[in-house]
Structure formats: C-alpha cells, structure tokens
Image (tube, rainbow, N blue to C red; front, side):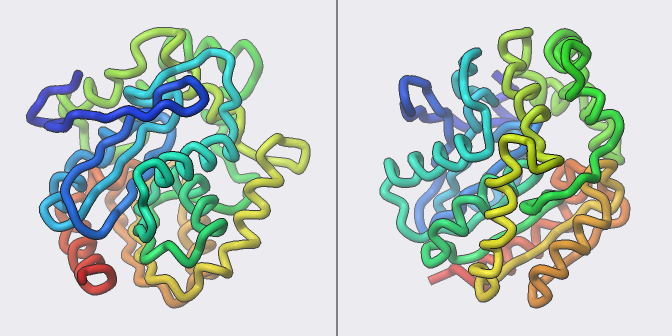
Length: 288
C-alpha cells in the first residue's frame, strides 16, 4: 500500500463476473468519474481526488487487472470489456448523471461509455489520450507488442511501468511517488493487464478492438454539446501534439490548455497549473 499521506483512501470492491473491481468513492454531490490508463492506476488521480472530494462525489476505478483490482490471468482484457465493466460499476452505484476525467486508455474507455449514454454525461476533461484510431505508436511501445519479447519486457522486467517513471514525466519523480505507481505491479502475474493493454492497441482493422474504437470515434459527434476541457502535456512521447490537434478538430468549441513543459503523466508535471482550471471548469459546468 502506498504511503497514507500520498494515498489517503480506502478502496471499495464490486464483483463483476466473479472478479473484484477496486474503486475509490469519495465525497458527496455531483459525480466525477476519473479513468486512468496504462501502466497507471487510481494513484494517478490521488491529488485531483483530494482537491475535488470536498465538493463532489469522486469515483476512481482501477480497471480490471490494474491497481487493487483482481488480476485474472485468463481474461478478456479488451476495450469493450473495460467499457462494460465501467458501465456495470456505475449501474451498481446507481449513478445517473456524471462527468468524466480521462487519461491515456481512460479516454477510449470513458468515451466508449459516453457515446452509449451521451444524455447522462455532464462534462468531460481530456488529458493526453485518444478515442479514435491512429497508427502512430512509439517504437518503444511497439516493441512491447512483439510476442515473447513483450512478455519479457512488460511482465518479466516490469519495463513498461518502470520505464514510464522517467519517460512519462519531465520533472524527476519523488521516490515515494515512484513506489506508489509500481506498488500493484510487483510480480509477473500482477503485470498481466499492462501487457494486455499494449497488445490491445488497435492499429489495423484486423486488431480485436479496432471496430470498437472506430465506433467510438464515429459516436463522438454525440458529445459536441457537452462542455469539454482539454489539458495537454506538450512533451508526451506517446500522445504527441498530433493527438491534441485531433481532439481540437473533433471538438472545436472545447476549452483547451497546452502545457509545453509537461509530459504524459501531466498531473505529475503540471498539477499546480491545472488545478485552478479544473476547479473553475467544474464550478461553471456542474455545480448546482
């Protein structure tokens, strides 16, 4: 468990088809759902959850296989499955209206649910992510898709999660924060989802999640009238400015802020600059 000062939360669990999904449920009021990517977990949102929990109900799941959720070895770790799990969680919690905060894989997962039920989405915050197909993928990530080599890098050496501690930030990460990111991924078995997420990146129509991601992209037009805030780290080796521009093309009315000296883990590098923009956005768009 990360240091209580860094992660002062008690996670809850819901059983989905026999596997436990872990999630944070903090505060009361209008609901904000925060969705992490790979290779992170709810720890990525720790500071934002603390910032917002006094005024809102903040729900932060760990996707199956991530964080403190179960890590089944024989499981369908696909985009559709993660979207289905999120929908099951919100149904179980009896959540009607909600806002989304998405990062990395959280973008495709969150938007995947949003296009299913756009009338229930109150606002969206987008950070260094994609919810549309692209063949742009860094070589260092593409290597992790190679059979056997990917297993060795991601599951054997924990190279994906450990590498992100330096590659995904501009400012050096404090040792306690680095340990927090690695905490749930301490063995070959516990790194299963990190590899499956990489393998599930849809690059061609032959890939399992290509159809799902294409349908999400086509459905984004349903969200045009929903308030959106785009916050982007400009020194992201993966989700480059190309992706930032792609969001602006799809949502020209969105409020956007580009942080040129922040990396992929934008909340680590630019939290102090982002916090007032986030609180103002939510006060404007979802405060009763």
